[in-house]
Image 1 (cartoon, one colour):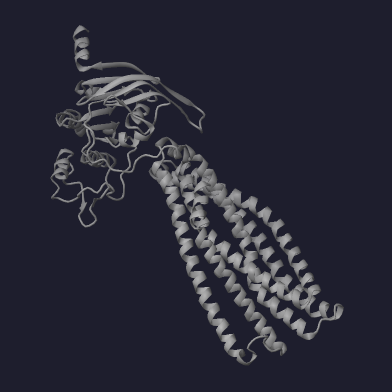
Image 2: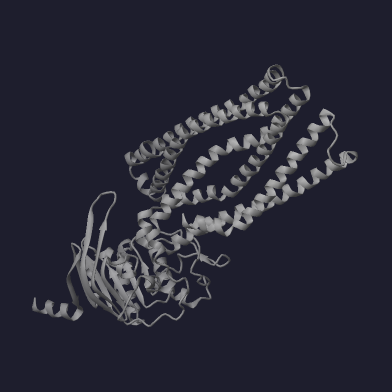
Length: 554
């Protein structure tokens, strides 16, 4: 992963500094071990023997200081890298085209964010392992100085146990990968349950199926894998724990009787091995962590590759307060092909040629699946043409300009989402005249609750009222172009009539260009122009005048 390499490169100096601290601290701890062994065996220190207790206290103090420095820098680096990982993922999502986001799915995003938390602890894991490894190497070096044969036997036993542990860990890794796949599908099922809760309450069979056939089944499989891997880890840990008794038995019985080791040598071996139990336990328990990190790296790498196409398009983050005056949008041979990865069905929007001029009130009509909504996504810049060109004020929109192009358009889509916070930064209080005027226009004066302290509006409303609030927020953006996709579908008949006959003409009188995707044929006469889609192509594009003449002739 490119951003992982960049982070490591950026932190290289700090990593080296922390590594040096770790090595120094390990050497100090080894020095303390030698000091203890020498004191027990009655041998004087090779340096400053008359100041033995002062040297001992000094070693402890220096060890404490270096350990604190080591841990402090580890904490800072771990949290910094965790932050950088999350920001790298979020930054890619920020620049992701809507099409790419649709392909990703929410569950993959949630999972990869969890993966970044695992990777954020990589420096700490690595440094802890490195520190423990240095300490173990120093201890074995000391053992080899005392008794080369005894040290070689102990080392051989430990290497054998490590190989056994690694072989079993490979079996566990396969199960953990499967468990991660189950986690992805679990998030998808959970999203279906939460987002479609009212639909589930309307159908007993559907409610039982999603719970028993999907959620529970998924969790049972995940539980069984978790139990199996935990038991395997437990077996490994028990093997590791009780293998120390084998090592102690070799030291206590084999070394003295077979190799003639003295009591002093045996005592030094026992104390050193006891001292090494902690660091070796750390190294062994890091193997499961290594497995989790490996899986997380692979998953983030897959996610990273899925967003590779986004890397080439970096939209500007600068807010253009002085938007260009809108004159027209022109489609020139614009086509778009969509393929549903689940149903394997494809849809083709045939080459479109049309111009939308400032101040027009346009209705886009057609049956379900005719291409209306796809056209709306192309018009708003959420979808990008597979061929052809789109012009704004007779200037072609480049890949880098799509974000700015979309920023010129307000839209309320069929499945429009109301955010929990006021991310636009609008002034949500009665002193905002524009807000009060829109509340009157949308007939929401007695329905909206404004939280002045938090500067937001309570969105706990009916579906139709939420659509009204969404339109209010879109109009508060004060943009020249407004796209509404089946906006009136959830409105009651009275307000629907009011919307078409009063609200839309008022928006037109304010100079807005309004494109309405609709099925409401009772109100087609209100449009300046009607564009009709059928099977992915425009079959009719008529102005009000042409339609009036055709009506008279008929």
